[in-house]
Image (cartoon, rainbow, N blue to C red):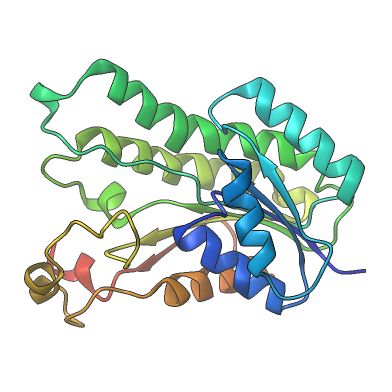
Length: 238
């Protein structure tokens, strides 16, 4: 029987690219997005059949609980979980609205905690189960105008390492991907021609390159509690 992979934030960016690779590997996909139509669009684009779309706001515990219950009832036990749901609102801390701070922390950090919590009981009977959380190189190094975004992503590192310790005895692995500048809708407004000059490889990363790293972490059976940086060498000069 094919593995079931749940991808939160699977309707765009790295999440959508990961869905494509996982489907090509023969996995069944449960694609989660805030918007049902967006999740369905991803499902319609995937190789193979038996993929399912779900709408869920990962920052709301009741929605997460209900969604994962439905996934188990309709699709079975979960083998893989990818947490790619996230938002970004840049501003200097002095100018940032408290509601924007809460939205960032609730979606990027609490949302990942809630989905991991909901998935774990449904992974206990899957051989080689794995979780990949999507952080950011900014969470490791910080950046001007991204204090709260950086804090939300930095929190994922501590959370990922601690959870990896908690569930290793159950043969569940947990790792963190920390991408740099990847060509997504989040980076669409940035001056790529200027910023690329500060990246040793002199370009932004492609979605497929980040997705390949997600796949590596999901399938590498002796890797857990690690942070994999995919940034073209940006961290070397930050």
